[in-house]
Length: 255
Length: 260
Image (cartoon, rainbow over all chains, first blue to last red; front, side):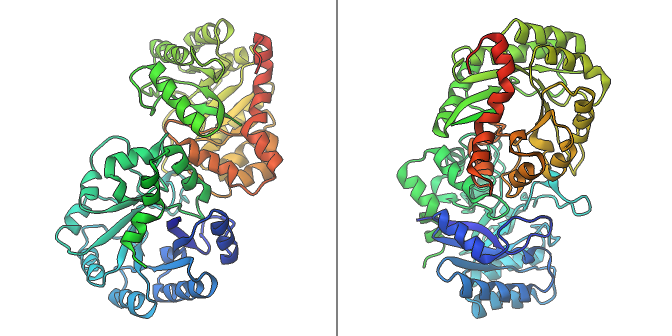
């Protein structure tokens, strides 16, 4: 079984990716033998009416991919009355988590509203996904350059929040350097979409532990095959691969 | 099976060139890579002295010494040191086992100081892989934009040129080299984005696109996915994975009496 914890639906503003139609997206997921995909909407990144974005996402998942598509709405703590968006994600749309884009929504991880959002999300028993980057900064549109999320304030922001479940998406963990290890020790999860280098996933497992790594493809901006082939390249023990493909995700988000 | 036009020792575990090479081949085996093209030693040096060029090329020569059935090597040169680079070209290609040239970021490739290297490489039938990037955050001082490479390619229409990384930002890189028939696009060293290979094949033709990984900094997996996941015919995938690189290397391999 494979659970893809990092996918998006819809149109990306800066280029065609070929899977704009949800039907085509679903065909690819099934061909890749992905049993469940945690999806957000690309509209979450730049739209300001995120309540509308979340509502459309929930409907699309319900109508087009029940059982396969699991919607993750977004909350932007820079917008007025953002806590209502969080409430609707949980109570109205029955979403199991929310996906945040701090760099595109222009706040840092030591922002008091972000810390409050973490607390409310933990209280609501929702999983919180923080997208560190969407694309390589070197390839951004010249008028829309968005640096990756600065993670240094995160350990302090999450300290002491009981019940918090947090995953970093598209967070390259460099082969050397200790900066991200405290996050793993604090219970933060990582996906494999942007882990790079020969044997990158086995190296990630060695560094943060097999229980902290989740399968994530960043499809459809990235080919779904990339994350799948990374597991082949890592040549992990069978139980470790099972944990990454689905076991850790299922623990994080019980059915 | 796959031929990979772009691999390094840098980023691969191991204390010596031989250990790093064994590790690289272990992963290559796992991913169905039959042959790799290897260049530059470790650590990476952006503006190497003549002595450093020689050291780095010696590391590569050591690395391939037990893998002649699996690895080709390109000689690392710098247009900042044309005379020393010509000596390295003769040492490693004319008189040694290397079969191509790698140029990185010491000097932009449209500048005329590079011309003696290109002319000599072309005489030796050696393909030239020039690193290119079109970075939104700004290139290094000596780092070539793919448009620089187009200028070079038009000045040397008989040279066999490989556009390293297809300019990184491939939507720009593909366009930059589109009207340079002597330039092929190296797919390696960027994120496994959907649409890249489709655009390259549409604009350049499948015979001008070659698979490369940029391992060890990149995984073989993410780079293979660009081709495997692309919406292009299977014949095009076969050409990109192996046939095009094999064709590119055939003249120099034949001149050296090496059977591919």
